[in-house]
Image (cartoon, rainbow, N blue to C red; front, side):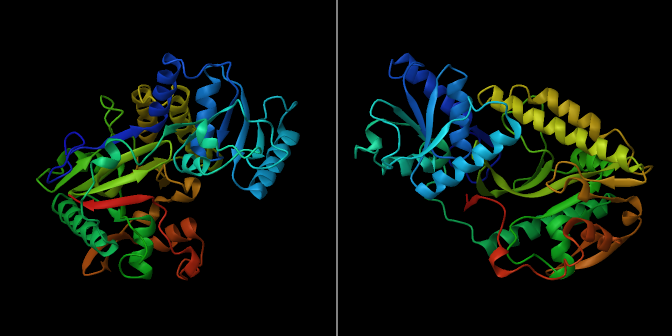
Length: 409
């Protein structure tokens, strides 16, 4: 799938900038004369896309009258939270945008307002009326519908991959990685939820849908240099020459027989099924210095994504940020540092341990294969999940964190 058409394997990685699509739509509507900055405007919804619409419109000189929602209780709660925030942090409320229940008698007159929406909020808006009973859909401008376009059409008619099939494919990838690392003398260990599953379930956490491993930075770099590509498997890493094609922090080994569509709200990804490959990097021994070091990476990551929002959905500035992040990741030697850890995950400082955790490697069962785990896995899991990690969570919390659609190609 070298463009977005069908093929027997998915050879590439595609990123759809939802912000870029919405920005282009606004520009087209302005050229057609259908909207002007002087028009009264409301935005339907309180999700990330709604807030992105506000930014895109305000950057072009529009004045937003209100956010609209279809739930009166939601409008009241959101308005209260906004005012609480303003009272704590702002000197004036001039920049706050009112939040209104669209059908309320108290809602301002919307008869002349254009209603902007995107995604699922657009479908909600189309079913609402204003306080005079007039349908909002008469003035509704949908800036983005994820059911339309190449990202939705390209997988039409393909057979969905079941949860069990996905886990089986990922386990086969892990076996391939394990064989390759052992043959080439590369240190690796399963990590995160995969290590937790290895210890607690002797395999996958039953509701999990991905596999994570990490390698010391020198081994990580050699892995990416040496891992061979064939018809089914390859390793992917971000490339400054193609920042709009791969935006993930670290590398992946992929199975090109399986296509995954992943919704990140302000952008969408289409790629093959994967195993995440993280580098373990050296860190300072002194606690405050280590905290500053960790914070510097996350600040760089935040500023990189701020550039995406400021530019209206362009990845053009990412190569420079990639270089800054790489400099941080390589600042300390893994083998000479008293602390080591992973940067770029949601765990931040918890994803950091004394280096002695990795002094030795254990071979442990994972389903019907064996994998490598650090001898100090208990300290690692204690830091990541708390000391009661052997107790499974409440059934209501046993769910994946990813928003995926998965198909056989």
